Length: 197
Length: 241
Image 1 (cartoon, each protein chain N blue to C red):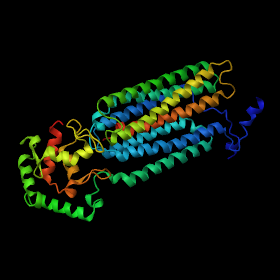
Image 2 (image 1 turned 180 degrees about the vertical axis):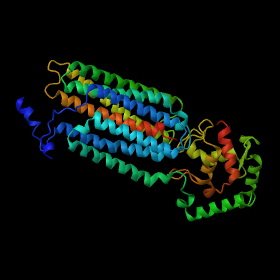
Image 3 (image 1 turned 180 degrees about the horizontal axis):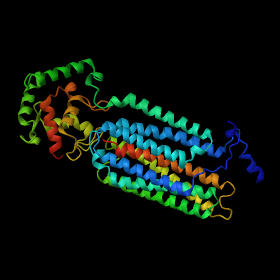
Image 4 (image 1 turned 90 degrees about the vertical axis):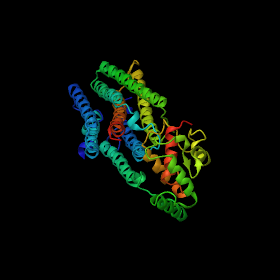
C-alpha cells in the first residue's frame, strides 16, 4: 500500500495522472459540445415548419431547472470540501444532495421532452427539433452518467474502508466532471433559451 | 516552474464553506440578471453581447473556483484551455462558413443556366403583370382571379395553379416529397397547424426553393408565378388535408 501511495507523487508531470486524465477528457468534451452548439446556431432560423423555438420553449420552467443544476454544483463543491477536510458526514450528505438535484434536473428534462413531443416537435420535425434534441439530449446523457458516477462514489464511501487513501482525489475528480456538465448547461441555457430567436 | 514540480496532489483550495455558498449565490444572481435581460426588450445586438458576457463570467467563476483551476497546477489550466480555444475556433469557423445559409443564397447559386433563364423569364412575367408568362399565362390569370392578396377574397380550396385546380397540382408535383395527405415524407408536413410562419415565407419558399434542402425553386423548374404561389399558400394554410 505504501509503495502504491508513493507512485502517485512521482509522475513526470508532477500531477496525479488520474486527475490529468479527467482534465484532458473535459478538454475533448469542449470540442464535442462545441460542434453540437455550432450546429444548433447554424440551423437556427432555418426551420420551415413549426413548432418554432419562440412558440414552444418554456423559459420560466427551464430557469428553475437551471437553478436546480446550479445548486447541485454548490452541493458537489461542498462534498469535495468534506472529502478534503475529512468531514465524511458532509461529504456523503452533499453527494446525496448532488445526486438528488441531478435527478430533479433530469425530471425537468423528461417533462420538457414529453411536452414538446405532445406539441408535435420531435427529432425529425424540423431543423430546430433535430439540433435541439441532439444537443440537450447529449447534455442530459452526461447528467445521467454523472448521477451513476456519484452514486458509485456514495456507495463506495459507505464501505468499511470508505473511499480509501485517495478519497479526496476520487471525489475531486468526480466534482470536475459534474461542474463541467454544469458549465455546458450555462452555455446551452444562454444560447438556446435566452438569446433572441 | 519549481512550484509546479513540487505541487502536491493533496493541496486543497483555500476556499471556505461560507465562500462557496457566497459564490453559489453570486452565480444565482448572475443567472437572474441574464433572465431579466432576456425579457428587457433590448435590441438584439446589445442583448446577445450582454448575455454572452454574463454567460462567460459564470463559466469562468465555476471553472476557476468550483473546479479550483485558479489554485491548481498550471498544467490542468493549459490542458483545458487548449480544448476550449480549439472548440471556440471551431465554432467561429463553422459559423463563418455556414451562417450565410439562411436566405442570402439565390437560385442562381444552385440551378443550371437553363433553369436560371426560366426563373428570370418567370420573374419578368410576374413583373409585367399576369398574362405575359407564355404557356401558363391562362392559368396565371385564372389563379390571380381566384385568390386575392388578402387571402380572404376567395375560397382557398378553389384556387388554380397554372390552370389546374390547386389540390390536383399538389398531388401531381408536391405529394411525392410532402406526402399525399401532406403528412410529410422527404419534405416537412404541410398541414395548416404546422405552417406557423407568415404567408410571405411560404410564398418565397415555393418560388425560390430552400437552399441546402431538396426543395427546388418552382419558379425556375415549373415557371410558377406570384399568383400560383399565392394559391398554393392559401390552400396549404387554410384547407385541411
